[in-house]
Image (cartoon, rainbow, N blue to C red):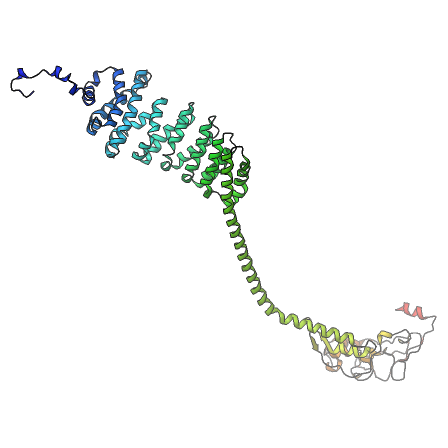
Length: 512
């Protein structure tokens, strides 16, 4: 090869057939140079072998980025962007061979340089999700973690999550389960609207006919709970766990019990006592041994928290009762200090008044009436002194008064020369000069209130002045004189009371 004469140099085709040049690197480079002219079948076989070649390090990083990656992008745009081309099996197989290789190169070489990832891979994401093929979708979902690390939040919500939601309702069970498992990495970057949409899909998947999907759904709910809003969490987790505990599939019940423990911080103690434990306790007698063991673990864990909550409630109640007792004691003490004086005074005054009235003899009516006139009880029970009345004859004992004492139809012990039995008391009221004799004290009330005729001047327009113009009549039919204006009755001219027969007693009373 180094001979100066070209004729002496070996020919190249026979030389390339030498075993020294028969290696994978040479073959790969040679095929990449001739890939455009290669048949579709050979191209597909070569693309399927490239991941292994890259993993073994046969081709360098520069070859992968600047020679293989542009070829892959060109092939995807030509086939995946054309529905008619994807309807052909050969093109579909070619795309299925390109997608895993594309994500391998992106993960191995482009992850270190985000600019290259944004330049080559990001524009292809919407195009790949638009391909209506389960194989292509499955290949994308298996590499969804690469997109989560390289794409921003807006691109994930619009270009990744929304197109992949169709996998939750796909008729293929494996694709539904793969979609569910792949979504878990996108949850931290989903916006509120997409989280609400995800919650609705999770509720639907809990009734999936595939037992493995129901089990993975309850596991997914336990992991996604921290990222949900409070409202979504309250609507989703407890009903979901309760529903899964009733699932006939044993792994699903076991996953539900473990998810309850993982989400215990999101349950209030009242919910634990009223809703969670009533659903967990029946599983302590579950047919599966591992389910029973997990149920007892859940019960023991929650009972510890409930005991602590009960002690805290008892402590709070004791503090409230203590505060209330101190408040009532302070208020009652101040009230008693302010109100004890008048209450005790009125009480003692009432006791003394009752004792004074109860111990006096009832026979001496005159002294009782005098005491009543000289003393008066006020509204609060205290005694008030009134002006002392003028001295006069003792009043008759009204407690033992009879018809004969009133000198109606018979003699009386009071019918003496000096006394007329009290029937002439009107004269005392009329005559201002008869203040000290006669009357039997009937005018004492007037004296008590300052209304005695002695205190009145002549010509005052008082009530007693009207007697000056009227005639005074004596009960009993005695002699009566007529009073003229300015005349006064003499105290010694007292009429006598005519004694009535016993037969006329009743008739006399009817006259009144």
